Structures are given as C-alpha cells and as structure tokens.
Image (cartoon, rainbow, N blue to C red; front, side, top):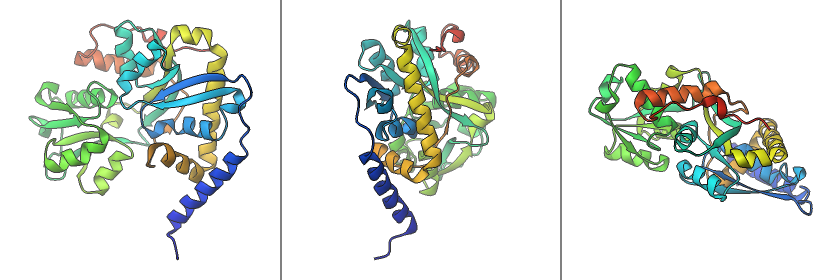
Length: 311
C-alpha cells in the first residue's frame, strides 16, 4: 500500500519522536514541581516540546501542563495557586491588574508580525462585506469578548470611521466559527491560525482584511505570566523555565516534522503558527492599554512599566 508523502512524513516524525523520548533522561529525585496553565493554541508548542523532549527535566523541573479552555480564567488560577505560570493575553493581564491583581510578565510567547500575518477578519461567503463600512448593522464573532482579537477588531473598525456600537459583537469559540458563518448566525469572524486558513479553504468565508497588520507591524499576542510574589521568590525557577522554552523553540526550528507530531498530540491539530519570541516590552502592553482606554474597556490608565519582571 502506498501512503501519501505527507502521511509518511507524519508517521516517520512520530516514530522519530518516540525513539528520542525513549532516551530522555528521567527526572532527578527532588525535582521542583511546576504547574503551567495554557489555552489550547499552538503558541505553546515550545512548552509541549520542552515537556516531551526532556528540556524541563534536565533543568530539574517537573512540569505539569494544564489546558484551560478560557484564558480569562488563568489569572484566578495563578492567584489561587492552581497554577504557577500561565499563558495570558495582554488584554487579560491589563484587566486583571486594573482589578487589583498584581500579575507580571516573565517572558513573551508569540508575536503577530506584518510580514507573517496569522489573524484576519473572515467575512461569510454570502455576506457581501468588503469594508469596515459594510459591517454596520452586522454581527461579528470573536473568540472572547474584550480579548486581544476582539479589542484589535474594534479598534480597526473605529480607525475606519465606523462606531464600534454600529456592530454587534458576539462570542464564538474558534471550533464553532465555520458553523456560525454557514448558518448566518454571524456575518464575519475574527480568526487566528490554523482556523483562519481552514475557514477560507473550506469555503465558509473569505478574507476581509489582515486587520491587526493594519494597526501595528508587530504585536505581542500572549506572554507567560505569574504573580509578582511568586516571581520574587522563584527567580531561579523562572530562569530555568525560560531556558527550557528557548530550547523548545530551537528544537522546533531544527526538527519541524517531529515538532508537528508533538503539536498534534497535544492539540489534535497542527497548522500555521505565529512567530515565537521571548520579547515583551512595555510598549507592547501600552499599545493594548491605549486601545482599551480608547474603547472604554479599561476605565483608568494602567502602569505598563510595572508589568515586566526580569528574574
């Protein structure tokens, strides 16, 4: 029986990964335990790789990766001790800080860049929407109200002279976007890869705009976050965690097929990814803070200079 080349590559990658795992050194006695919460996105592939390839273990970290379907719940997990580190979008971190939670960023995870767009507004195939003006009176589905994709979509609409109140914004999880578009329950959606490509390829809709790229050339999508008190007492842990994530990024670049097999294991899918990057700056958060103030999502300014923590 002849298998397609792509299927053979995936099978070989899975076998190669299994063989490599057989030689991963076991955790040393007394390894430090660490719980990391993350939403189900391939931005966290370096962490999956670091877990499976032993990059955490060789730094004496016994890491548990806990998927959290809604990223807005991760700050509560950090404050309540259910997680030590979590993947938190900038908008969620800013809202948490406005609410009195002293959360800090300890590392960037991924960025959206103009030369590598992964986010777009997808209009329904029969919607006849071709501009921001055409969105007046329409419904737009976003993965989370006042999350990063939502805030940036509203800011894009406003930048085109259309009041955000002229558009109805509804929450639609990524896996349900195709069905919502097909039924006409929404007229457009804000989607990120790999869902963006799938919606277009399956004929559910067409790309209206890479709206994030129109707003900014480089945008931090999500960062590793913890409480300031935990960060202050675990500086060395953060250094070792960040080093393992960096090694995971390097492994992905050198072993794309094996990395794709690990991605499918954790997420059940694989696809285009945002750019992995450890960088996070005050200006990254200032961009979101200004947009959120402009939209009335934040009620008062947030000191973005206090967000970044250097161990």
